[in-house]
Image (cartoon, rainbow, N blue to C red; front, side, top):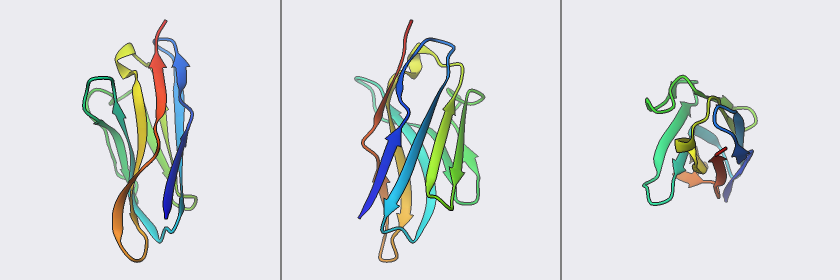
Length: 119
Protein backbone atom coordinates (compact mmCIF):
# COMPACT_ATOMS: atom_id res chain seq x y z
CA UNK A 1 0.00 0.00 0.00
CA UNK A 2 0.95 3.60 -0.49
CA UNK A 3 0.30 6.44 1.92
CA UNK A 4 0.62 10.19 1.52
CA UNK A 5 0.77 12.24 4.71
CA UNK A 6 0.48 16.03 4.63
CA UNK A 7 1.43 18.58 7.24
CA UNK A 8 1.74 22.32 7.61
CA UNK A 9 -1.74 23.73 7.17
CA UNK A 10 -3.25 26.31 9.47
CA UNK A 11 -4.58 29.83 9.87
CA UNK A 12 -2.65 32.77 8.43
CA UNK A 13 -3.40 36.42 7.81
CA UNK A 14 -3.64 37.81 4.28
CA UNK A 15 -0.18 38.46 2.92
CA UNK A 16 1.33 35.79 5.11
CA UNK A 17 3.11 32.56 4.26
CA UNK A 18 2.68 28.86 4.91
CA UNK A 19 4.65 25.80 3.92
CA UNK A 20 2.96 22.48 3.26
CA UNK A 21 4.83 19.19 3.23
CA UNK A 22 3.88 15.74 2.02
CA UNK A 23 5.68 12.42 2.46
CA UNK A 24 4.91 9.29 0.47
CA UNK A 25 5.60 5.87 1.94
CA UNK A 26 4.85 2.23 1.32
CA UNK A 27 5.24 0.11 -1.79
CA UNK A 28 6.96 2.69 -4.01
CA UNK A 29 9.23 1.76 -6.89
CA UNK A 30 9.28 5.24 -8.37
CA UNK A 31 7.27 8.43 -8.33
CA UNK A 32 6.45 9.90 -11.72
CA UNK A 33 5.05 13.19 -10.44
CA UNK A 34 3.77 14.81 -7.29
CA UNK A 35 1.59 17.81 -6.76
CA UNK A 36 -0.91 19.77 -4.77
CA UNK A 37 -4.59 20.35 -5.38
CA UNK A 38 -7.12 22.29 -3.36
CA UNK A 39 -10.84 22.31 -2.83
CA UNK A 40 -12.79 25.20 -1.38
CA UNK A 41 -16.34 24.76 -0.03
CA UNK A 42 -18.84 24.46 -2.86
CA UNK A 43 -16.13 24.32 -5.51
CA UNK A 44 -14.42 21.59 -7.50
CA UNK A 45 -10.94 20.38 -6.69
CA UNK A 46 -8.38 22.37 -8.66
CA UNK A 47 -4.72 22.12 -9.51
CA UNK A 48 -2.31 24.21 -7.44
CA UNK A 49 1.10 22.94 -8.53
CA UNK A 50 2.80 19.86 -9.93
CA UNK A 51 6.39 18.72 -10.23
CA UNK A 52 7.67 15.88 -12.37
CA UNK A 53 10.42 13.45 -11.45
CA UNK A 54 12.72 15.48 -13.64
CA UNK A 55 11.86 18.69 -11.83
CA UNK A 56 9.52 20.34 -14.30
CA UNK A 57 6.88 22.43 -12.56
CA UNK A 58 3.44 23.66 -13.51
CA UNK A 59 1.23 26.29 -11.87
CA UNK A 60 -2.10 27.87 -12.76
CA UNK A 61 -2.13 31.64 -13.17
CA UNK A 62 -3.94 32.05 -9.86
CA UNK A 63 -0.87 31.03 -7.84
CA UNK A 64 2.01 31.65 -10.26
CA UNK A 65 4.64 33.87 -8.69
CA UNK A 66 3.32 33.29 -5.18
CA UNK A 67 3.59 29.51 -4.71
CA UNK A 68 6.64 27.33 -5.22
CA UNK A 69 6.64 23.54 -5.35
CA UNK A 70 9.77 21.52 -4.61
CA UNK A 71 10.45 17.82 -4.52
CA UNK A 72 12.96 15.42 -3.02
CA UNK A 73 13.11 12.23 -5.07
CA UNK A 74 15.40 10.46 -2.63
CA UNK A 75 12.97 10.89 0.25
CA UNK A 76 9.69 10.80 -1.70
CA UNK A 77 8.60 14.16 -0.38
CA UNK A 78 7.13 17.29 -1.86
CA UNK A 79 6.66 20.73 -0.38
CA UNK A 80 4.62 23.77 -1.29
CA UNK A 81 5.81 27.20 -0.20
CA UNK A 82 2.90 29.62 -0.27
CA UNK A 83 3.62 33.35 -0.04
CA UNK A 84 1.44 36.44 -0.31
CA UNK A 85 -1.59 34.39 0.66
CA UNK A 86 -5.04 35.71 -0.14
CA UNK A 87 -8.44 34.88 1.37
CA UNK A 88 -9.34 33.11 -1.87
CA UNK A 89 -6.52 30.63 -1.20
CA UNK A 90 -8.59 29.25 1.68
CA UNK A 91 -9.27 25.57 0.99
CA UNK A 92 -8.39 22.03 1.91
CA UNK A 93 -5.09 21.23 0.22
CA UNK A 94 -4.44 17.68 -0.99
CA UNK A 95 -1.15 16.08 -1.85
CA UNK A 96 -1.18 13.92 -4.98
CA UNK A 97 1.32 11.47 -6.43
CA UNK A 98 1.46 9.26 -9.48
CA UNK A 99 3.37 6.21 -8.33
CA UNK A 100 4.77 3.08 -9.90
CA UNK A 101 4.63 0.34 -7.30
CA UNK A 102 6.40 -2.24 -9.40
CA UNK A 103 3.08 -3.90 -10.12
CA UNK A 104 0.97 -1.01 -11.31
CA UNK A 105 0.89 2.74 -11.76
CA UNK A 106 -1.74 4.74 -9.95
CA UNK A 107 -2.81 8.05 -8.50
CA UNK A 108 -2.71 8.46 -4.74
CA UNK A 109 -4.05 11.20 -2.48
CA UNK A 110 -3.37 12.45 1.01
CA UNK A 111 -6.08 13.10 3.57
CA UNK A 112 -5.96 16.86 3.09
CA UNK A 113 -4.86 19.76 5.26
CA UNK A 114 -6.86 22.92 5.89
CA UNK A 115 -5.43 26.29 4.92
CA UNK A 116 -7.39 29.32 6.09
CA UNK A 117 -6.39 32.85 5.11
CA UNK A 118 -8.25 35.38 7.21
CA UNK A 119 -7.69 38.47 9.31
